[in-house]
Length: 291
Ligand SMILES: NC(=O)c1ccc[n+]([C@@H]2O[C@H](COP(=O)([O-])OP(=O)(O)OC[C@H]3O[C@@H](n4cnc5c(N)ncnc54)[C@H](OP(=O)(O)O)[C@@H]3O)[C@@H](O)[C@H]2O)c1
Image (cartoon, rainbow, N blue to C red; front, side, top):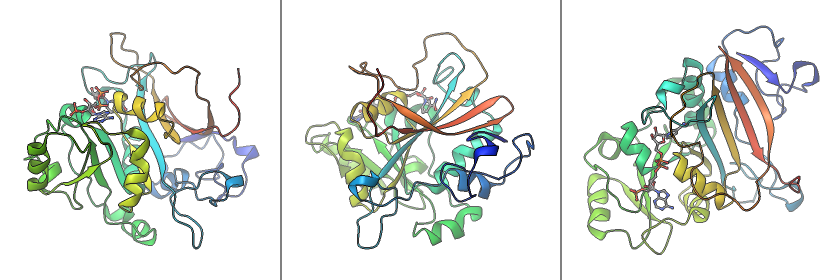
């Protein structure tokens, strides 16, 4: 793994948030340890003062922690978010390592129901390598999976709902089918309302999850859910893997949904490379958008 940005020669102290990862020469190219990747992707820790902007997962003394919503997606070189309905054909070992680390850093993983249906989602598992880090951060053994659905057309007999180490959340609207809400509860899931109709109001999701003690949030998509979060202005950060593969076809891009009136600006905070895969990290800009 090589760090391409920020460039080695300009990087600050190893703990600076804009200089993640090992402080080796960019040409070293050795695989990073899980610890090094975790340091590189640590959730931002900032003050909650208005001048400093939004806080990360941990607030200062006496201040309530503010939620931070990070997205993690992989796209082909030509912009496809899946191939044949799965993201795996676009991925790599390094991508899966980072995917796993991002999960291990999160309090909750928010995912759209279609991704659960198509990708056969399983509960996040406890990983020994992250046990001490999670305990020190006040986190449970594994992140909770939070499935977003209006129809609740989900198979509640799956291990995702019946066998998680921490209960799976089902994020839905208050008017979602009552029988399906009951079925979710019966399976052991925690049903959480974040909308008055059947749908979830994406803008409410970070606050609602923070109310359940989850502030370090990760969404793994899919594209329609990510599009809703971005349109609602709550996508704080995007970790995007660019896969050196092309697919053509009609797969969705990583954000699917109506176009924005004005493009929303994000700034690059980190760029890593391994085996031709680019691992970028962008944070929503707080300044005025460029024309
Ligand atoms: N490239 C990547 O990194 C990546 C990541 C994830 C997934 N994928 C791929 O993306 C595809 C699936 O993505 P997708 O865009 O079709 O679906 P998706 O975003 O995973 O899920 C869409 C579903 O989520 C629920 N949903 C979304 N917004 C909602 C809201 N505001 N309120 C209530 N429910 C809401 C609805 O579920 P109900 O229909 O149950 O109401 C909706 O049908 C798969 O092929 C998967 O492989 C790729």
